[in-house]
Every structure is written in structure tokens, then in C-alpha cells.
Length: 289
Length: 259
Image (tube, rainbow over all chains, first blue to last red; front, side):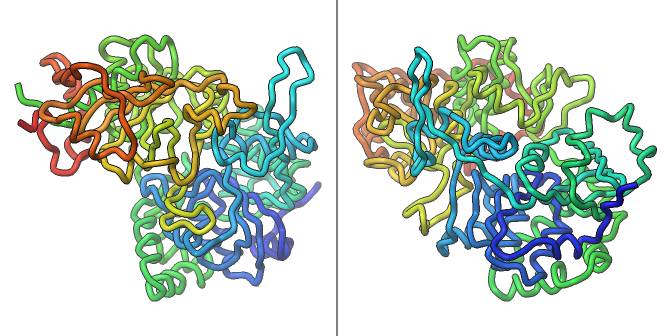
């Protein structure tokens, strides 16, 4: 039987400088943070990062890993502004700013191996700057923007369950855009809360939580609490308390050095202990809006 | 009867969803959200409201609370939200950082886009929303930093500015409604969609609103006073906002009638 299991560090070892990497999840939901932290610790550099951004983008920006950011927003949701993102933007980090739907459309074009998909989005705004247009060949003759494909060298996604072959379950209330991001990428690496025997996926009852076929998936690493401090509901919720610690860690170079020493330059077991341990994470209450 | 400025604003925001049909209603931030809730609870029971994440709720969910399982009536994951937007089946009220005389808005960056003086959250879904469904605005601090002269620093939403329209044609779904602030209610009802003062909050003059706006406002005759909330509306708002989010939405929770 196929076995795609590897460690988080082995996934990082399959990435290379200058790659275009999509990071799944959304802002504070289901970000592959164990993998993001491992990249931040690695020698990788000059990455183009595509994300519905949250602390994933912030950490990688703070660690100096991003050459260019493709984004529609970067936010900690309950805390509107991502402090490392703000600092990086204000220091001139190169960006390609898009509408959220344009990001989706660019990924979909890549997934369909199309050079572009037509869209009305961008009309009247500055996110369309630099885009070419196409004209409908039908009677309407309408002019559209041609949203170019956003082809990814690799996608990094977090799931709840996987077997060793890459059959996965994403149990969240909202699957977000992970499916389209995975299909837009040459290589797809998932971290899973638990890697289990195929039978334990209970796939016959859980098909609605299966976002892709296993041939989409390149590698699977087990990473319990691997989305923390973002949520991986229903397994565990957003850690707003840690997000506040994270924001305080952006207040000055000294604060960042202290955050980095406590939460980044440590192994996964040390990280889990530092943020309060598995029992703390498992007991987090869901956020309100 | 006394009422707060937040309550006056909630009632004004609710008008965003008058005569809009069976659509998803999105109000960004506590006061527009409570405006949508008030609209649904009073004159627009057909509106569809979410819990703030991805579930539609039959009864509006109070800010700061979680939807009860028995109150869930539908699902609204992000992927579907785009189709709702692109299908035009949504009416939103959002809170931009800057707005100009065309109704173009900015939530991306203050200053130069490549190296901003202040980086904001990013354009989010604003560009797509602006050309697919009706949009209104809530701006809590009416001043010339928010209502800018010239154009906004980075145009995130299309406005009534033909110079930026593809082929010079009006974008199909462009439909800007109200602008509610701490001073007044405005709309785009002036000549060529110029921004017009619809009503002044109690004790506010047109001159004060104009002095705090970076472009010329359209004025027609005698401008009415923004209607005070009725006793019934205040009671409904109190029920819809069980946690009192409206009392923390504006600095010092000022009274609605400043006189």
C-alpha cells in the first residue's frame, strides 16, 4: 500500500528557495502552523506566498522568508491588523494585492490548467492594475479582466484526519479554499491532527469531509495541534490568548526575539508545553463574533 | 425618551435593507450588524443573517454570543459566499477607512501602496462586492481623514467614477446606498450620483458636516433631522443586543441628541 507519511521537517526538505507556496486555511482558521514554524526555522528563502492570510504570513514575514506576497488580506480576525504583516508592508515588502474572489479564481484557473479565467472583479478599482482584458465573443460583447492562473509549486494544508495514502477528512464547519489550493499545486503536503488506518476514516459516512482524491496529495505528516494558535474545530478552537501573546511579540525587536526563543526556536513538544499543553488547547472555548 | 447615538445609528443603518428582497444581509461591525438584525426583526423578516461565521440563523444572533443549534437554518461556507456575492443575492454595509466623492473606498493602505505610511488589512472582498451587489457604508468618525479630497489612496471598491470603469461602462452591479456617520445620513442622490446629505443627527448642522468632509456635499432645501428611535425599536434593539455591544461601539457611548 502507498505510504506518503513523512515528518514535518521532511516536508520542509522537499521545498526549495524561490518556490511559490500556497498556505491553506483562512486568517485564524486551520492554518498549518507547525509546518509554518518549521519553515520559519529553516534555511528556505525568497518564497512567493499565496494565502488568505493570518499568522502564517505574519510569522514568515517576520522570519524574512517572503520575497513576494500574493494576498487579499492578512488579519488575525478578532485582532484586525496582523502586526508583522503591517510592519513588512510598511517596509516595502513586494505584494500582488487582489480581491479574495480573484485569488480563488486564479487558483481555480491553475487547477483547470487554464492560463486565465474571465471576471468582472477589479472593474473600477486598483486591484486590476496590470491585468489584461478579454472581450466576450458572443452577442453581449462585454469586456472582462483575464485573471491569470496562480500556479503553485506547493500547497501546505492542515486536515483533521488522513490515512498513510493521503485520503483525508477536513471536519471544519467551513472547508474554506483548501480544495482549490490543493488542485492548483504541483505538490501538496498536508499536516493531519491524526494519521489513522483507512478504515478508521469511516469514509462511507464522511464523504462530505473529503475534499480531494488521494492522488492530489504528495505527503502527509502527523502534527497533533498543528494548527495552533489557529483553530482546527471541531478538534480544538482558536487560542485568542496566545494570539495576544503573539501580537505583543511584535511590539519591538526585543519582544520578537523573546517570542521567537519561547515559541519558534523550539521543537513541537516544547512548543505545546510553552503554550499551555494539550489539555489547555483541547479546552479552548469557541470564539464569538 | 433618551437614546444613544449608537441606537440612532442602528436605526439609520437598518434602512440599508429596506425593500431589498430575500437576500443575505451583511453588516460589518456591531452597529451595521445590529442594523441588519433590526431590519429583519421589524420590516424585513425575509433577510438571511449569519452567526458571523458560516451558519445562517433564523433569529438574529446577538453580537458576542454563539448561535444555538436549534436556531441554525442554513450553511454559508466561504466558497458559497462568493457565489452569493457574484449572483447579486446580498446587500452589505461595510466600514471603509477612506471614502471619496465618487463613493470609492479604501481598506488597503494609507499613503503609497508599495510602501504605505499605514498598512491596513487589504482589499478583502471589496472589489468584487462593489460591482456585484448593493453596498452601504458606516463611518463612525466623520472627518476629512475619512472623507478625503480627491480620490482615496487605493481604490478597493468601484464608485461612480467613469474614468476607472472598464470601457467607460457602468459596472453591472454597482449600486451604492447610504453613508451613515456619527453626524449624518447621506446617499448618492445628487446630480451624477453626488453625495447628498439626507438627514442630520439631532443638534448637527450642515456646515459642521461639510467642514468635516474633504469634498463638496450636495444640499437640497431644508434637511430633516435623522429620526429618533421609537420606543418599540429601542426595545427590539435591547433584545437583539443582549450583551450590550452597542454601548462599546462608540467612544464614551454618547447620547443620540447632543443638544
